[in-house]
Amino acid sequence: MKDFFIADAARFEGQSVTTFFLVASASLRDRKPSGQYLALTLADKSGQFEARMWDDFTEAAATCTAGCYVKAQGTVSKYQGKFQITLQKLRLAAAVEIDTADFVPTSIYDIPTMAAELRSYVDVFRNDHLRRLVLAFLDDPQLGPAFLRAPAAKRLHHAWIGGLLEHVLCLVRVCLATAPFYPEVDPDLLVTGAILHDIGKVRELSWDTSFDYTLEGQLIGHISIAQGLLHEKIAELNAATPDAPFPPQLRLLLEHMILSHHGKLEFGSPKLPMTPEAMLLSALDDLEAKFQTLRNEFAASKAAGRSSSDVTEWVRSMERPLFNSQAWLGEEQVPISED
Image (cartoon, rainbow, N blue to C red; front, side):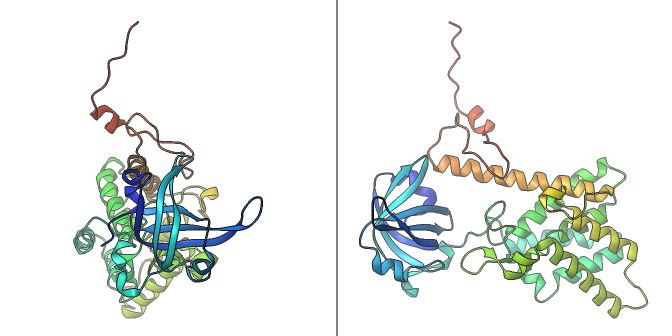
């Protein structure tokens, strides 16, 4: 087990640390007025930060490339409000020195427990066609296990092992709590859309040693992948039960929910939400993702040593900084002077 994680950087400011990292990126850069330096992005399960090696980096630059594990010694410091590390030593790590659990973030919730809860919601569907469809995905020998382990994103919300399942389960809970207020919405159809809207991410993303996009993910994207998977799975169901084909109306409505769940054309949705289920799914999916981003930013702000009265750094995906109102209210407030 590592004794230093990147999230601990605030406690080690100004100190020398020796530990292991995953190299997310590495490159040689020009140094003014002459020469070069080695610039890296180092990662572990708690996050990532920038690293610089100014001297004696020739061997390290040749061997410590993106995707490899390294042992590093350096001094933690803060630059322009962000923690980084200036390296004095850097080498490849031996396999016996590495516990991969230290480098791949995993959901804090038990994955089998989450999977069982999600299945319990499907088991009580009134619509037999939708129940069979969802269970066909969950029980698929390739898609099912991948769905349980996949992250929901490379870097933003739920970017950890089990993140896709965690995101979907939270979204389903919110959908079930919200649907009674909107009688125009079919709850079974809404929950089916919530479970399947991001199913394409099991092939859009890879997550062995670090999170990245597959070639299929880069060229096609999870929305189109999900659309294709839906067609394939319904074709399999129809072949298995030709006397009870999947209703084409349900297929069309589900396909629309997948294609429109990003909500806006500029956000990557091929279509805008047009049905009650699609509109509610898009709104709740966006809200659920934003709140996980909010949690991530609050945790990062605390790890960086900011006080409860400070806003977070600028959050590019939300185009604003954020403020933890509950942490601020939870601290004893200094009375405001009336003078």
